[in-house]
Image (cartoon, rainbow, N blue to C red; front, side, top):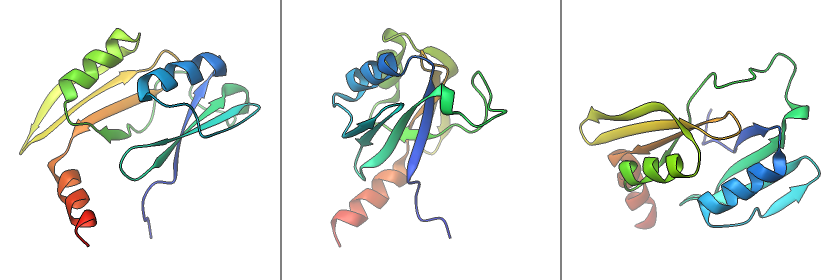
Length: 133
């Protein structure tokens, strides 16, 4: 039933500051924008990261870090974590070696969203298989 995530949405009280922060982090500008919303295409599968003005958050949404952590694959978790912290994010979960080559960490971005980074050997196996088909 689930075929892959289509969009991960992050909320921001200051949407323009969030757009600038993520553009710097990702090294790209949003590919789509309209009042109250920006979208970036990110990574090997062009996954979508949506930044949304927090005025449009569903009623009852958490006002701070809460819920699921979506991990983005990175080639170097330590370097990724250091970059995020140097840009003003704060540590949520420290760099953790999970065994069998899995390493994770997560931060809270300056806008209150949880951003996870992970080195995941299975991700690389799947990616390698997709490019050889």
